[in-house]
Length: 427
Ligand SMILES: *Cc1c(COP(=O)(O)O)cnc(C)c1O
Image (cartoon, rainbow, N blue to C red; front, side, top):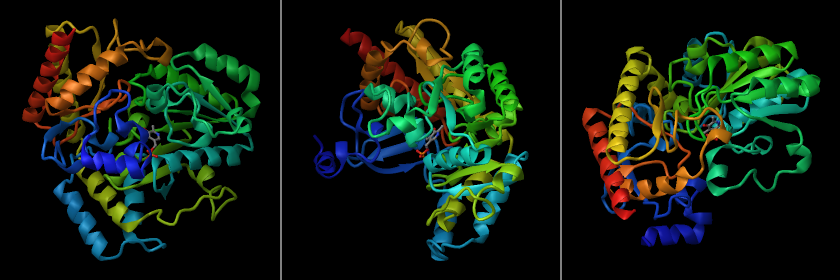
């Protein structure tokens, strides 16, 4: 074991600050990172990898983009934290709202988890109802009431829901299958009057990439309106990733609250929730729903978000990301054909997922064939060995960034192909 990993394990549970980083599901040692730049990540021993994780989503421009780093440095010289409103915060709020133009106000927090937790509190406060509805396999951060059947971290470790969540709280969370209008209808017919909100990742990307039918999301919009419940689109991954205005823009469906995270902070800790005035006037100091944060609207983090959003302004950027995603998809598919690996690549723009099962990629968790995970573990070990940093879980997606040029994608495809070759030789 690497001496640094050994030290890490002595002082941090599993040697990590977030579970999936420990590589338990795929085996092998997680490298300790020294630095990352552009599309590449370098470990403490100097080994260079082509990175397909992108810090789990935020690094859409690639690592340490010079414009973002410069913006951070300039902001840092002017103060690290004020505990008061700053100009960059106003500017980032304006920039966010002009991308989600149906919303009137935004509140900044420090993580996606916090954004979701606050959005749910707002929904409960505004409706005076307690029950919430989520979908199987959707991850919304480690919020108590949402850690029920939630996403890859739990699926990878075989935990249906976290310990430490009082049953009284879990009972208020209803879990529905994705892609199933009838199940949603049945739940609303029975408990519609008690439901404060339905929360969904409009592009579920935390348990594979389970692309939903637009008509399903449309149905949830209709159902929530009919029953006086709110609809929350958790766009912590998809917002600013698949289009400037996320899935809200792509589907044309207007939710009541959108949560953001990851890209909005450009690699610094920022989350946000946004809604129309009717809801946002419920939030303190204007209304009775309390939510606060010592480091919220942090000037350095705001600077990183601003610089990132500025570089994403050009619509061409998303076409470019889509083209690069398509290129990687072709590379992966070619390799899979060549080495006779059963599966397909699900993709939306620059988000890709290796679905290691027969037929088209699944749309709901119960359609996911869990037996692919063992094969994925083998592929992962050989990919890492060949200098390709893939997500250490069969159910996590890959992200391509603007720093991934044709050469990086070719290198990634070849490393993937060599990994499949090695897997075939083993079996
Ligand atoms: C990552 C993620 C979160 C949690 O964000 P953190 O910043 O990790 O707390 C919430 N919702 C979705 C959809 C996410 O992908």
